[in-house]
Image (cartoon, rainbow, N blue to C red; front, side):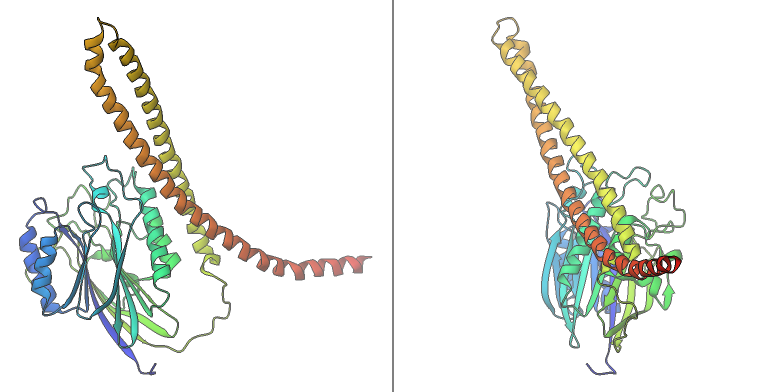
Length: 423
């Protein structure tokens, strides 16, 4: 690589909020979004909540002169809502659907039907391999009573693992999306610590936008003020994260967010604010680490957050098993009642009553059976992530023990020498 090598990458990210028939002014906002992207001509535009494939096809056609490469990530019943538009050719594409994604009986939330996922596209730019990821994690519907916390932590761990295993040949790693987590939330800290990704808002040399980089602000007319009751200034749940391999230096020159309105036309593009980052990659001679570590799990902050995540997943696992046990009791009770109804149906006087109660009882057994199967699956998904975290923590402990023994050896020798002198 030439010493004067440099690469400039302009990135756009937005949760578009495109629910057909429900999102306000969806078509009008889509038109303005297309105009804005064509005008700005970013290298990459990554979108979430494009739930209608017709909306994607509209954008693809409208943006084709500026962004010839585009892809829509399909998953679940409704779809992942993820799509990307690139000025550069996309070399490879893949996606990973999260194992856990809410509860099917929470129909009014709808996350389970979406098939939340992470999409990956690989670009070759100026001889560098760039892995760009776009994702959307489970929503947080209540800060005080977050019943989806374990699912979101498990998703963050899956996302971190997916990035870790797919980016080994990449020179630059970029992650954009709606993580539905505040910067200090457990899942966000776990993701950053395990992958080593930097936060563009925190690292930016020049920032312009909403206070504290918030991506849902009270000044946006599409934002429900009830959602921001605990955070009057807004919340930051959308991110641009990045890193580069050794020998390359990556920095965020500028980072901008919209502030409740379209920069050119006045109205908001979505209920979320758009993120725009300018990243610069240049050659950097490798620097020798004076105290290298054997692996990422040995760092104290990472070990701490891994333990915290392990504990949270353990609690979620116990809760899932409790619901599965309750459902199994309901199945047993329902089967017992069915047997009783069969016995009553054999008698002349009680036959009509037995037949009348038969249908709701069968419904009870089937419903409890579905709940049992789902929560058993949930428990196994949480158990898998829990076991992976336990394995990583075990490796960290084994790696730390030799260091502790080496540190203790000189002290032990000194103590033995002092003992000989006293004799």
